[in-house]
Length: 372
Image (cartoon, rainbow, N blue to C red):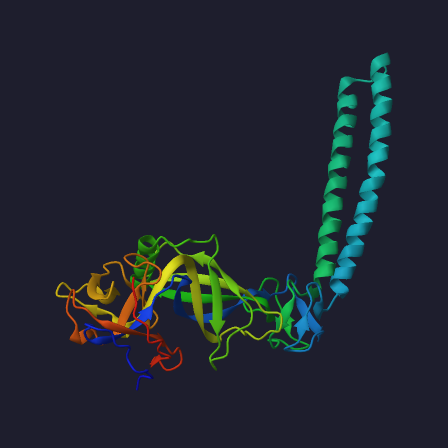
C-alpha cells in the first residue's frame, strides 16, 4: 500500500497523480555471471631422475614454499656418478697443458727445420682433442651434479600441496606420467566466467547507446554461495574472442587477491562485472514504464502542470529498473501512479513521492505541484 499525504488542491486542477522528481546519477554498467574458482597456478610434481623414494619430506595439505624439499630419492648412485665425473674432469684438465707444451715445442722445431709438418699438425690435433675432451668432461660433471641434486625433489612453486601419490620404498621414473603430488597457488586465484553471446551483444549495445565510459580493466566483485560478499575487488584478465559452439557462450576470466585463502579451487560464485560507468543516467522504476502501440518503452511526465507522454527508444533494462540517458532533464517529474487516468495535455495536480528502496512502495509525499 502506498504511503501518501492528502493531495494538494488548486483551482481548476485536474486529477491528482504521484510523481517522482528525477535526478541524474553516476551508474555502473554491469552484468552478473556465474563463476568457478581456479588456482592461480597449479604444478604437477614429477621426478627428474629414477630411483627408490627414501622418504616424504612434507605434510599433506600443508603450505609449502618454492624450492622446499618434498621427496628424497636414493642418492647413492648419483653421488657415485658425480664422483666419477669429477675424476674424469681432473684427467681431462691434466691432458690440456701437456698437449699445449708439446705443440709449442713442435712449432719451434718446425721453424728450425728439425721436425716435419706432419708431426707439427699431429700436435695441433692432439691439443684440439684434449680441449674437446675437457669440455665434454665439464658437461658430464654438470649433468652428474644435476642428477645428484635432482635426487631431492623440490617444490616448483609455493602453495598448498595435495596428498602424496607415492610412499617411501616406491620406485619412481624420471618424467613419469603420474605426478608424485600437486601444488596449488591460491594466494591469488582466477574465476572463470561464462557470458552468453546475447548478454555480450546487449552489454555492448547498452555501452554504445548510453555513451558510457569504459575503463582499461573491468572491475569485478564476487558474492559467495552463502550470499556473503567477497571483500576483495578483482579485475577482468581475459575475454576470449570466440563463441563456444556447444554452449553459445564467451569465456571470461577474472583475477582476485586471496590473502585469507577464502576462495578455494572448485568453489562456485556469482560475479558482478562492471564494464563501464554512465555519468548522467536516470533510473526509472518499472511501474512507471509501459510500452506504446509500437512496443517502445514510454513514460508519462508532468510539464507545466500538464501530462505528457514520452517515448524512450534507447531505454535499457537495469536490474529491476529502466536505464535512460536521453529524453530526460534534471528535475523531470515522472508519473509513477495515476497515469492510467490521464491523457495527453490534460491538466493534473501532483504530489511528489519517493520510491522506498526496500519495499518498492511509494513513500514520503511532498504535496507539491511541479513545474518541469
